[in-house]
Length: 112
Length: 113
Image (cartoon, rainbow over all chains, first blue to last red; front, top):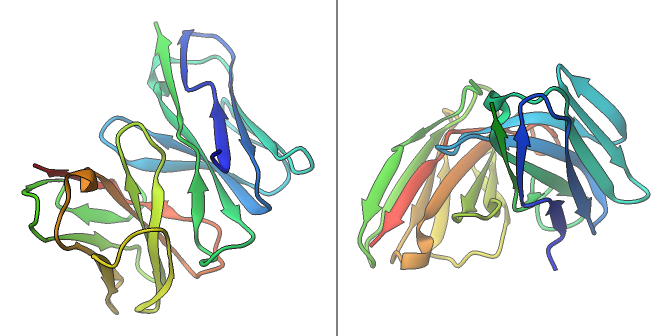
């Protein structure tokens, strides 16, 4: 079982829809990241969370430390939101303080 | 733009060959991490360098090695390439080891034939 699980794996939405991507993890963490990866590979950091909720434009990220669960929401989705969204956690333990453990990603496609 | 660059963008090598991938971190970032991302998978941690010393390693064999230089650049070297080494290789830099924010480069796509 992976330490970081995301759902769904693939998501197709119509422009304007509200989108939720979920992330569950099984290790103790110091922080959780939501990342966006466009075709071609480059990764952009969207949020870093250790508690509560953060909002940036149409994106909202929440985390529940007790339940080891985080969600990424996109309001009023747009075709340019089409990308792979990756959840990554920074484990409290392990060989390197800088080590991120990644989920497999959720591929989002927003149709016009 | 994260200020982190990688070269080359794409690379094709033959099984058994050796390859060097390069990363240029943001100025002042003392820590660089390297990740391997196979097709359809999330990135996997290879190793991290801090102030030119290896500071942690994932589950990768010794034929994966690295270097970090004082000018905030770094290298990932892979010897005796195998077909399964075909992947996107990402580097990410951060200010210090304990800095939570990592800035990713665009990646190098390596194909081993």
